[in-house]
Image (cartoon, rainbow over all chains, first blue to last red; front, side, top):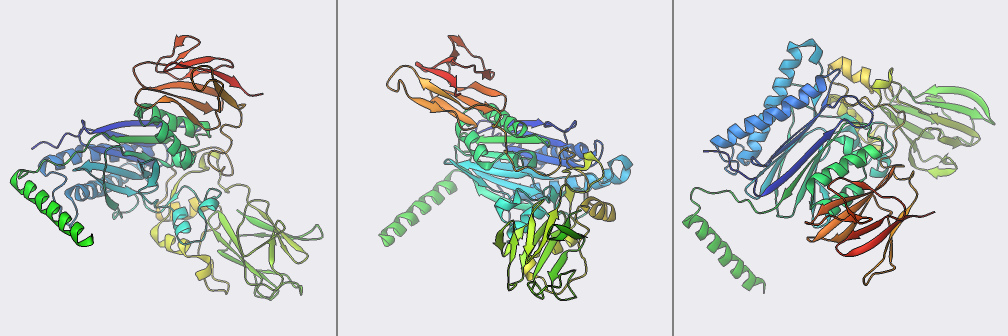
Length: 291
Length: 261
């Protein structure tokens, strides 16, 4: 069985830029509308090690998830009570962590490399997300921008504990300190979530090079004005970051949901119709009781 | 590394580096900064330092703690803040993270989980007595965390010193501009281009945007089969820089772009 093809339902635009200050780009992006997968990684490590770690991560997720979803569809249940999409994301990211550590121990020049990762796997009108570090996922829906991931950073912990306000946080000298990353320890704590997806939604994956440089209001304005032209929206976000100083590599992936993409169930016929009928029946009865 | 300069009547008394996680200020001798003056409470205030950031908290002192003339309960210290306690002044100096090379500025570190717990605890939850230093000295997170655990690695090597709030002065360089509608029912109306993006046209039919950037205003086609024209010439898919008094035509509407003096 081949992995489902979502390219009719999803449009994606990915851009990465070294910024105005850095010579090299340690970010890596992968956008595969057919597979319904978007992955962004922000590498760290001297010389070129950072881009090795981020590049390994996006490449591994791209190839490995395709293979796993070909064996088992992402909407089917996984082992831990989650969807297979989430299970697969978790296990492939754990494997990327192990491979980064192994590569770093093999080659001295790669020692100490690491990376953040944020991954969005679309399937069955849903979105499974996984993230480690301070790369983010936002959702643009109904003219409102919502941050779906919470940074694994010292600053976020300080905000959560009430020690520092969101307003004060922008003046903090403790930005750029992440509390989780791939390539640090053999065990990595991967945060997983799942969301219902609606046609018209636009999702934004981005590195801190965007969010450090561009106000959320300007991100929202860009998505509001340019969601009809995704490549232009991506370019505008990069321009905004660079116009504001571009002090870091900046990467964005935009995903627009053009149509519903329910999973094709093997027993889609009678069983699905029965379920729909029962749901309708319950809804009518509930409506009658409430009324 | 951040430090305080203690002075009275513009006479510098001493410099105190903020190396400890908690630096206490008060009249009693057990304080890190003892100020033997009756206007100062026994335990007057505390400065909590976490890596490169320092927070000042008043410990319900009798005469209060002031920063730059304002009474505070808790305050996130910024470079050159002046703390006033009675006749004494403490100037907070934290001009840049004390890293060794320009390439080190702004790089991302990984903080190990065991360190994390300590850093994340709110200041209020800590015991009031001076505690043993638990955090690495302010300004040296790289060496402290990275080499000890092999856990940290630089992510960003940007130049620049103190962090700037995002989107600080991006559009400050350009003079304000506006467009005036020349025909149709809206003729005579002007629209100021104050935002980073201004949308023109009708969604689903023909849309273009004007992006306000530090080096100019740029018109870009967004959607629709027709592209807008500038001075009668259709623009392509690339951003087109607008000049003073350019005439834009889009979906039958003519507009003049002009810079405001």
